[in-house]
Image (cartoon, rainbow, N blue to C red; front, top):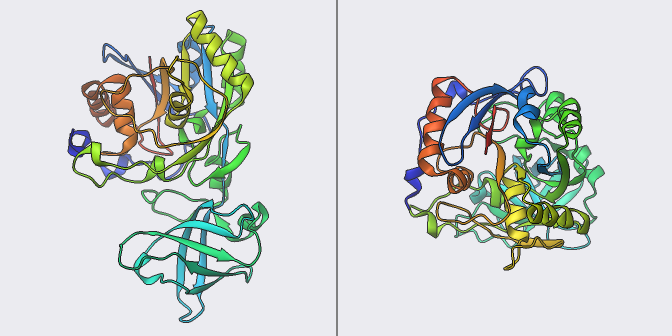
Length: 346
């Protein structure tokens, strides 16, 4: 399939630049997975739309303050780095994504806000790649990122991060730090909605997938089959794997909250259809033709054109159904992307 098959027109004014005033005050579109039917609700209506006995699976990854600015020692010029993941177990060597990467050469040194120094290593200056590794003398702890980092808002949010983002670009149940972007479907959930779901008899469970390049790197290939998914790491506990396998055995629906939860559950499923516990990496890329083994329903945001995420939801609900729903969302002036509105597919 062509990447352009997943394009849709989106007015710039529908790209949400900030969260709604109160968490959970978002609009919710209900999309029939098989029928393509569309209905309009509010996020507060979600508990009434989820059947008792459903198992909802959330991603509890916490966003790291991973966007950092440094000064090049030789020139005094500022450089932005997005920290992705540690390369070494001592936390002294990190993979980073670089804006204006051609200027970031091997062995160049940079000074960060707290005075810590880093040296660029493994820079292939001829590849055009935006990825580098930075070597530090001391390990980078989460305290270091709190002192030096900013909330890594995506590039389509055209403003600097503020104190509001420290709260709202994080789910209320975020626990395991490691994501370079928020698992944004979870941003809509308030404690009152979670309590209402539990009171109705909906079972809740948490997995961890640290959001990285596999989620947000754009597709640059003309044919989607040629796109390479970067590895992301996920964890599923023994208890949660048992909950999922029990729900499947009993015929109860599994509702994945967010594409990262979808990728985790489908990656953790073995050839016998059982979800296995453990911590592993995944390169899974889901596009039309993929057969889902675990996920029955999905709660998600409205995604960017031609992205791996709109391909994933198209695999789940059908490309025509998704593009038609997105067309209606544009007509109804839904808010799109990370701080935008949400969709339940069932």
